[in-house]
Image (cartoon, rainbow, N blue to C red; front, side, top):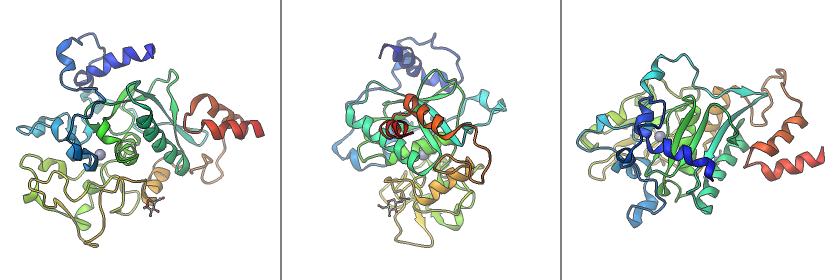
Length: 318
Ligand SMILES: *[C@@H]1O[C@H](CO)[C@@H](O)[C@H](O)[C@H]1NC(C)=O
Ligand SMILES: [Zn+2]
């Protein structure tokens, strides 16, 4: 627990981090006021049925949404330094699996941790992504309950914040999966470059000032066909100003959009394509494996929370 404190201090200075400030040394009282890292649900009783844009509404200044630290409702603006960085924002693949080291805030209670670990387990079941406990790696995510659900896109380098406040965890792991997909490098489905063929954006129904949350991304998730059931799709009422749809599906008018239950099969497919891997962690087309199988399984014991039990069994078998 004590080991987490330096990170908590740095996190409180998040606005500085976004600008690429290298240290927490300027963190005085004032920089802590912008976020509350508090497990007490600060919202109304109905917060359980809110999706990401509604949960984060309070974090985006209504008078000047364009100056918000969030893009499209839940994406942290990249640091200006990053624009000049040549570093790939993919997480590196090793021996067929992609390890994403994480720190989990000590402020989460047991049910909250459980929801987050469930999301890790879903990635592990269906993809080559392995969320592993932080163990001194250079690049890692720090998951903390600030007020709101947000993340940056891809690997930023060093520590990067994934905020999952209490309201982001109340409906199960769906929002966690969504934010972790951002961490892996994916943008929103409804802002894909080809989205106008699949949805209509009802510009008149969007909260005035929030229209830029519906601008098409330049980089897009176009590794797979457009998917209404993607966990990366926002729902019909995202940023609605009076409760009427802002997003209308064109081809299946009654289809549910904005699901927050699981990774859809196309979400799984795009992870596998983007990282060129298979769920088992074996290279898809018989490329060389860097590590012998048994050795790898035993390594899991030290590093991965979500496979802890099964790894022990596998290890003792071999
Ligand atoms: C996700 O959940 C839905 C609804 O329960 C189910 O129909 C679908 O098959 C699930 N998708 C995957 C990839 O498991
Ligand atoms: Zn998002």
